[in-house]
Length: 201
Image (cartoon, rainbow, N blue to C red):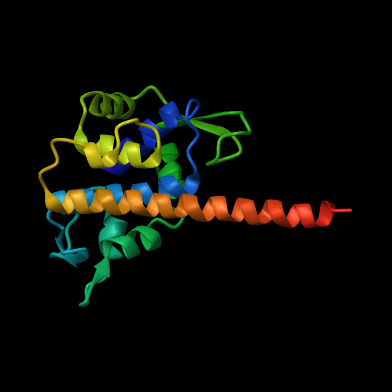
């Protein structure tokens, strides 16, 4: 299992208590992919720039897609730019991939933000692996779960993270989610103000 798959399963497992915005999840999944690429030495970070190594077979279709989409010319892509570009629609891609493997099931509820039906993890080895990884306090998964809002541990307070590249990615994920939340709130305020203008006598 990849970190992104573990994150998605964990998110869907607790989504009934803490609904997650699709955009927040997509950004965080892009961060999870990048962390796996760092750990596999498929990329290194030069400051906040993603420097690709030799192309690797990651053994996972979506991670292979991530490798093939890397910018391979200097000055390379920043972590922030990667999150926004790679993250576009990524949560739906992961949901589809896990559904195809039978690791997700559909429950007919209209309030879940990813789909009109609530998507939940099936009772599978993938679910057990993801929940055990989070319960063990794995700092990477805990950090990503905190960024997407399904874990109470603040990202900046995590212990056990000694890899500067991973710390950089987690910080960028947290910043991107915060930025997206601010954009969403600003739009809600603007929409409410617009509605009030039309309702005014």
